[in-house]
Structures are given as structure tokens and as C-alpha cells.
Length: 232
Image 1 (tube, helix red, strand yellow):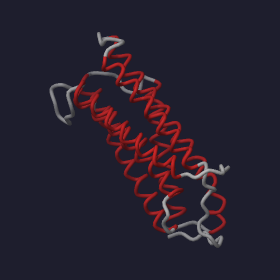
Image 2 (cartoon, rainbow, N blue to C red):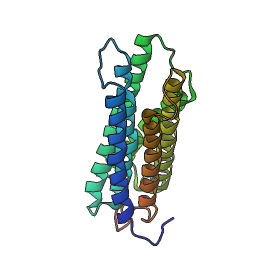
Image 3 (cartoon, one colour):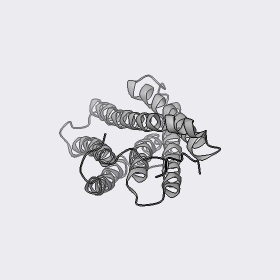
Image 4 (tube, rainbow, N blue to C red):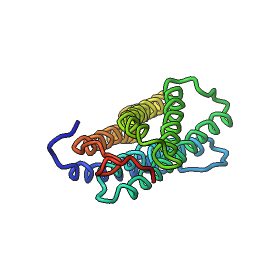
């Protein structure tokens, strides 16, 4: 499906929203939550790594990877590499972010994988990894047959968008879960921090919306303009 509108305005808005979302999560984790540390007596500093890397990785860089393949005015081969590398970076940051959450739980005596957010998160990072590996092997190296790439392309796009939407939904669930824990521990429900967390989640969702809108105006990108589904 493609809309008869230009993608460029949507991409500009998405870039701005990405910066805003990143600033908001950094203000939250640094100003209100005390910053970051991989080793610390205050285990909350370890946890703070989690929301920042998950937002920066799977949501922001993952979104930029989607936009890059559809909107950059570059050769197909260059866009493929950018798309692949950005998704790889997003996946790596996501894995480190999840490790930080496990590390925080283990060192704080908190159970792992008991919440819906954690269940969906493990599913999302697993699907993200499988999607990246399949894309690498099929479209990059060693590259599948022309028929396989032709058949895989629409499914690769569909699964990629689906996984991204799941990641965004789970990020909102994560913000809600953390804020609920904080409020149950005494954080003011109408205080500055509570409003900041909610606005961060809303900005994240709106950013993802504009990522999708930046893709919809563009028809599905073929492997090249001549129907030759060649790998790089």
C-alpha cells in the first residue's frame, strides 16, 4: 500500500521526535533517577541503562533503519548496508539493555521474567534477532536465489514492521510498569517525574507512528529497478 503523499515531511518529524524522546528518557534517568553505572551499590543505576538502551536501540535506531531503506536517495546497495548496520546496532543495544535489566534483578534479589513486559520483551528481541539473521543471509550474504528473495521481500517487510510495532507497544508497557512501581513506593502520581515518564512514552509512540507514516507513502522497494533480485 502506498499513499499519494511525500514521505519527506514524515521523516523530518520522526527525526525531531526521536531527539525529543531521547532527551526525555535521559532527563528521567539522569536527573530524576541518578544516572547510570554497570557496577554500583545502588542497583537502580544499573537498571537505568535498560530504558535508555532499549529506547535508543530497538525504537529509535530501529525506526531509523526502517526509514533509511525506504527514504534515502541512495543506491540500493548503499541503502541495504545502512539498513543492515542500523538494525544490527539496534539489536546489539537491545541485548545489552536486556542484560542490564537481568543484572539489576539478579543483584537486587528480584525475580526475572515474571511480568508481561518481560515476556513480550524476550519475544521481541528473539524475533528481532531472527529477522536480522534471515535478512543478512537472504539479502546480503551469501544471498538466496532470486526467487527466494522475490518471495521473501514482502514478508520481510511485513514481519519487520510487525516486530517494530510490538517493540514500541512493549516499551509503553515498560514505562507503565516502572512508573507503577515507583508510584507504589511513594512517587507522587501528579508529580514532575510521573508526567515526564508519561510524556516520554507518548512521544515514543508518536515517533513510531511517524516512522510508519514515512514508509507507507513509498511503494515496496524492489531489489533494483530491473527486477534482478541480486544480493550485495
